[in-house]
Image 1 (cartoon, protein in one colour):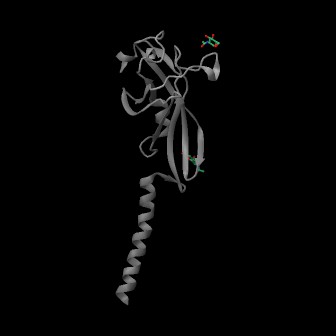
Image 2 (cartoon, rainbow, N blue to C red):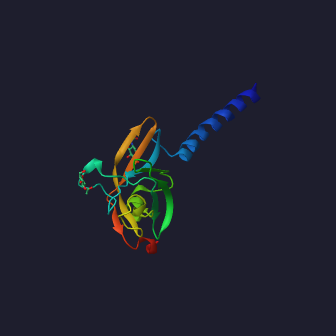
Image 3 (tube, rainbow, N blue to C red):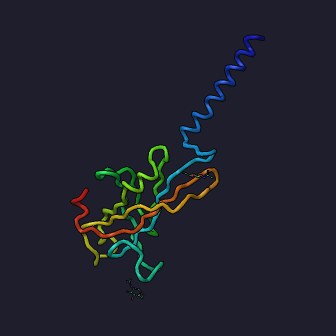
Length: 160
Ligand SMILES: *[C@@H]1O[C@H](CO)[C@@H](O)[C@H](O)[C@H]1NC(C)=O
Ligand SMILES: *[C@@H]1O[C@H](CO)[C@@H](O)[C@H](O)[C@H]1NC(C)=O
């Protein structure tokens, strides 16, 4: 009997201490799973942004988008889909939002000539990041980041 209750107490303690550990490993913030999502569209224009024709601006499918931080460290990458959309998900335990925003850029190394032969076959696009707020999706608390605006850099390939 004494052994049984001792075992019960032991199991209880084990269960109580296991919960916060699991939460910490999953990055649970107030019971929600925190995620950082970087999402945007790359357009097939001279600067990668939406043109004067708005949403009918042609997009840049199958472009490789890299998230580079500090001195050219690629920390994540994605490829745009048929609609020119890319999406990256980061673990907030590995990335601090404020330092992501100040130290990291999105880079598109795939030449613009891949989507339009009249556009340059060298150089690439670069955009800083912009935080646009949190959204709750089920048990997820997502911090949303978008490219704040691409620019074309003719010598991008030599910078990184
Ligand atoms: C905008 O659309 C018009 C009509 O389709 C087209 O002639 C023009 O070239 C487009 N402009 C740009 C910058 O894509
Ligand atoms: C979502 O996360 C942010 C910080 O990442 C926090 O400030 C906010 O309170 C969270 N929202 C909820 C409902 O937990």
